[in-house]
Length: 452
Image (cartoon, rainbow, N blue to C red; front, top):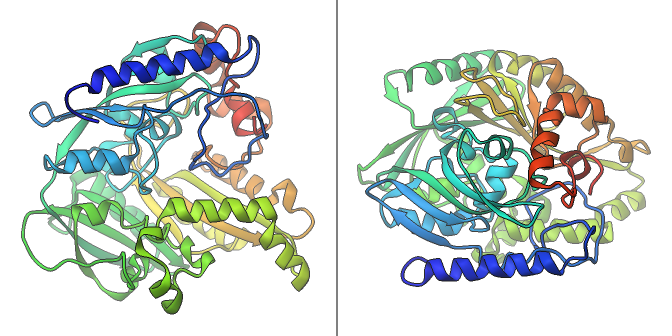
């Protein structure tokens, strides 16, 4: 979309958005008319008209001199990266899945291996336009109440239509080192060292994430940007990226393939669809080995309760979906993993360290403190109590006992008082009163807990 006419097309799209808002009956709730999502929490079914965001999915401009990009809110990171890599640049944080949108990552908290250096995606935003519940486009910058409350608001304060973000230069390749740790606390100590110095054993570290395969087997993958040419690995074919952490100590990828290394197999979750079986993998077209394809398959399973029906036939206990990303302080990581093994028993889990530069009210991590995001995505056989989410409730309690926080893209079970205390509900309500005085948008609690 870049080039001549891009601004005019953007304004036309915003006009369509306003017209769709005006067409929604007064007093009716306002939500997006968007078929795709990267959220895992259920939503109350609705046939009501929604906001038309068509035409808001492009890159308006890439400025390689200023190291900035201007992007529409529904633009996917796949399209954004394609536009910036031409200039040898990438966003400061690129979430792992191709179809995550920039606006979605800012309002819903994306994360990736550069988050130890660069924080979360919203921390590289210089300015954005937000379409509010009042039907207005508000331009907002860091320090404004709307801007500061927007991260982790999940559309309860409005939707980003345009964002201006910072970029960083990158060479053509990424050199990887996979370091094994037998003890989680030693891994956490290494993360703290990298956070403080930017190095590990004398080598610069530009990105860091990891995998805990089982108790006593944890890996950090240390990424270093490099222009040095050489052979690269390709994990979009028969080989599977997450398995390589156990199979080799070093690796090399193109920057493009590094950014999407997890997407091909949706981390390791493609195995649930048979896509990791050698025969199935050969027959499964490469263009369909993507997280959004797996997400569509998962929606079909939910719609027709395929897994539940198979479990009932086999006499297996009912499953509880345990799909969460949580942040725990690095010095409590070992404690959390030991508890998780005893109470949930799901492996592997993803590890992604991060630091924030300032306190963001709707997701109040402590600035300068090192956290580790622990991501786990699967199901656990728990029996008839599964609909009540006993494992998820226990995870919520443990994470906050350890001084951490839980992302809200998946199922949440908090009571209202606890939720408001953890996510600064008073501030969210105050900002919402200014920009959505008629309560056209659902509250964050309605969205995250009540499935609104």
